[in-house]
Image 1 (tube, rainbow, N blue to C red):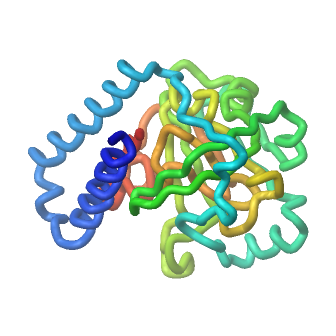
Image 2 (cartoon, rainbow, N blue to C red; image 1 turned 60 degrees about the vertical axis):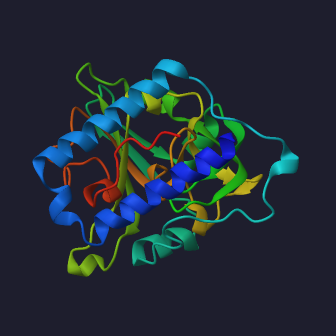
Length: 256
């Protein structure tokens, strides 16, 4: 029954997102509709944290449950000249800048991430399109990275800026980005993953490093992460909704 309900909710979420993007834009922009949707989103977030606990774990699985081939979501290859150059040298020069509202800005190489304590977890990826897949992820707990950067008191959200353009960048297409609040960002299962099923992360799954936030739907788990910024709000960031798909009508909170 739980799986059936989850499947229904996922299909409903996908359907409502598609509806918003394919003909209901004018309705979704009405102030009373926006207010209702925002309140439903806030209620969902409060309910999850009230009944499940702020740091309750997402289900973890056995090795026998791992899918033979982990299905990739979103971009399969950023296909920019810069990304191709990084891939050609095994991402040896890839760095993740950590800045914004922090006391100690960081610039982390992949070697730096590998040198930090790691977490391995076998979890299920739930896509807003309605499919799921189980894989084993290894990476650096994001909480450790944030602790090293020392967030300032006014920091409320963590932004993830990525290397995959959502269209032709020469024509002004934006690059993918996402966000989490600090509570979800410091969750024990929120990691900067660099390995999938015991091997280096493949390009189609976000190489060299992607976000895994296991209590969220797949579109929250940014791939090809290049920059992390702590902010107080989203007002001056792209469309002001906290993520690429959110700017197009998806809910910012995508807890499952």
